[in-house]
Image 1 (cartoon, protein in one colour):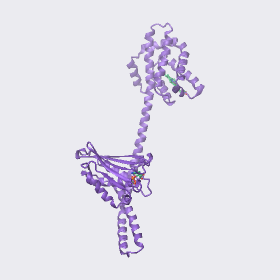
Image 2: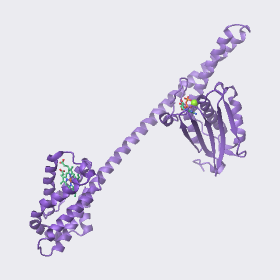
Image 3: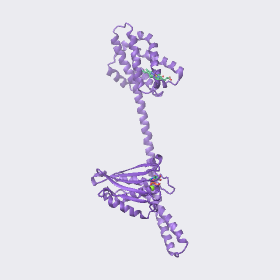
Image 4: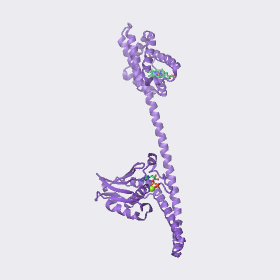
Length: 401
Ligand code: HEM
Ligand SMILES: Nc1ncnc2c1ncn2[C@@H]1O[C@H](COP(=O)(O)OP(=O)(O)O)[C@@H](O)[C@H]1O
Ligand SMILES: [Mg+2]
């Protein structure tokens, strides 16, 4: 604690050399009172279960405390209130933080000390007692403030430390993701072209086979696997190399059916029903249409993966002020809280064949289009994904508007 702060405290309560002299004059009368004051202090602590709990060191500790408190009391009447005094008082505060004494007990305990000292001194005939007691009150308030300052200082240090570790964790995560992103992008690029070549060649072979050839189904399987790889590579590129959105006003009533028709060939959707509740036929979105299609496809495919055969998925748009909410609801397997907490992270997947990029891409699309995405899920009940997007041109928060 800075010595200017100590000076400031003294000035604030008007503590000067006369107060120092007054306290010095109380030293003699106070001395016989100290055992009583200390006794009263520990009676109060021991009658409070929470405060008593702090005393874990047994009789030995209590004995030590009686001595240190007595010394502390003697110090009050020493007549010297310099920076060494300040430092020792500040350290007492530090000790209490270290032993885990809740801060509230400092002013409360000080009140006990104050009362028993004053009551004891009043039983004696001391000239100008009121004047001298005023000096004692000033000093006890200064002492208390200094001890509370150490609580404050340690708390600041703890907050700064927390911030430092949080920032460090964020930075290393961001760097890590940027590296993975770059790696993924270059890898995806390397894979994309040969994959297209292989796919073309296999198709040529397939076309040359007799209609009844047993190899036709093999070729079909190979093409299926290749298209899965192609989808993964596309996801990787989409995630690692996001394109800036080109927003326009799109009608939800056209967007959703278009997405559903794009998904017609999607195997995971064959055994589930997607129902579009067109309850706001004039609902619009101001966003990049291609990116929104991507987002909806990812969400509907996820919902389908979670849904048992014959189940239904519901897609709905709700207008709220200048926002439009796209809600994708399923009644599938749902997510336990730990999965839900990580579901939006890139590369997080619980599926053997998943990339873990679907929701990460959705989040990025929502973010870059001035929106947000949230999940609500309960195991075995289902999942609701809500995408909140601007409804009109002026509802869009871009950096250049
Ligand atoms: C006005 C209030 C108080 C004053 C002036 C005071 C004074 C002191 C002093 C002078 C020390 C020794 C400091 C050191 O060694 O650095 C100390 C330590 C300690 N105090 Fe207090 N105290 C106060 C309130 C309390 C309260 C309410 C508790 C509640 C349990 C408490 C528990 C302790 C404990 C556990 C230690 C450490 C003891 C050890 O193991 O050495 N104090 N206190
Ligand atoms: N509708 C849903 N119901 C249950 N779990 C889901 C749903 N959507 C996403 N998840 C969970 O979130 C994880 C991450 O999803 P996503 O990022 O799309 O990657 P992927 O689908 O490749 O696993 C999934 O593996 C799954 O565990
Ligand atoms: Mg997915």
